[in-house]
Length: 376
Image (cartoon, rainbow, N blue to C red; front, top):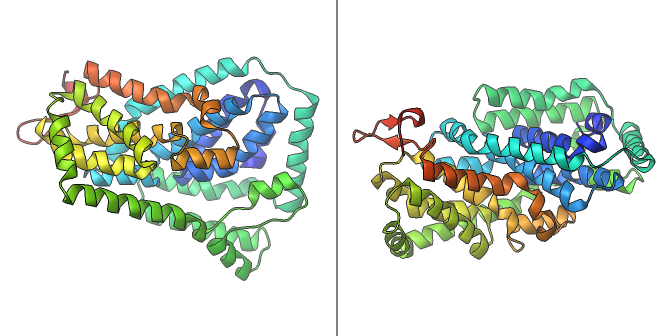
């Protein structure tokens, strides 16, 4: 995917292209971090050779990566938000399209305008050619290998559950690593568990493709466990009950409840420094309030992602902000103006709450009243 992406990237459309590429990759694998740690790293190097500011490139990478992360059925945050609110996963994703698709279109338009000021240079062409040559020298390149991620995307499109879809993708990648790339079964098993390491002599290629396996995910898993534990403590000690009683008194309708939820998610990101907690805690706080206000749970699940998942990157001491700095080498203040999707989605979500557009209510019987049929 990196190789063929490099074949088509042009300076004036680079920001648009890399946003779409990151969105597709993240959508297929359900991980913004993995996308930023692979395609994102390549994008930073190529963008630098084109003379594009690092913050601008990082913003495009982040926008694309978080679009896919937010909309993928394989994403941990997407499953977490839908699970905590007892909302069907695909109903949750469909409801998020109201805020996320318009934000993506706005971001692409802005990146198209920003990219129009950059033109091709000899240095940029040399860097791309060198990278492509190194990839060819170290890997077997074939368009048939694109069938592996395509298979996962197709399975997701047909609503295959996350675990079987991921398992098929892993098995196909494992088979290709042995029979196409020429690694032994032992080396392939080691790559699954401990990660893949390449020593090609090209520092850029080595840093791009040397990545962790199952072991590298244990840190993220531990953060999830801590987040869930923290939310449970807040709930069972009565602290959440005390907070929600005060906040719910100020939220009489969707006009105030949804913006309050988004603000709570951002506040939790800033104070607890973890994206998962910003979803868990507000979900526990507001679940009953949404029901009392006659709002379907899909409104809460969308607000959790609009305010929690996407704003985590704007906090320098949040795990997401720290990861981006370590991976892309760009600080929060540099990419904030260019992570357009991440700050546009919460704004759109608040505007919808005020106008009543796409807000799904419950009838007294508990039947869902669809957005197109209900008012403010």
